[in-house]
Image: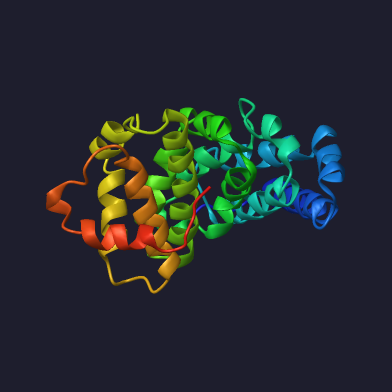
Length: 244
């Protein structure tokens, strides 16, 4: 195990202090106040620290910085529609979170790492969700579907359901989801089916969101017979749940 030098310890301490300060500045503030913090470089500072933490071998301190960095970013993004253009910049928080999900081992991914994506998908419109797909967000989310952490899986499947719904809505009625073949071939669909069918999760909404995701993937076409859950899935759709 590599030992941290005095300089590394000092840098980690300063980065931690900066992230906590940004979080405290943004938490509970009005969207326009948080946008001002972003315009003044707050979100970029977060991205720089996360990016730096992803360089070289990952250790506990780096993981800690990425977690509180994502929490700080979440505080700035929450219900803040004006933050979207900043978030999707090259090297912005969306890119950094996707890189983070790809870098971390599955057991080290916490729900806090997903918070920026959760905030963004909560307020984004369908066109904006298409941009998130183009950036590769679904690949990172697909990885987290295999987590043994119930909360991580709940967050990731909820985020995916909103994105898939947005893509499906953009295509319009009667048209196939353009992501169908990709999600079949890369294993994402299989993971969603496993989540829906498993008894390992007690969260009813996880079942709902996975069912809705599968339904959106197979919009305008029949669910494969080999899945063996068509009736159950349609029963979910008949309930009063709605994914925007």
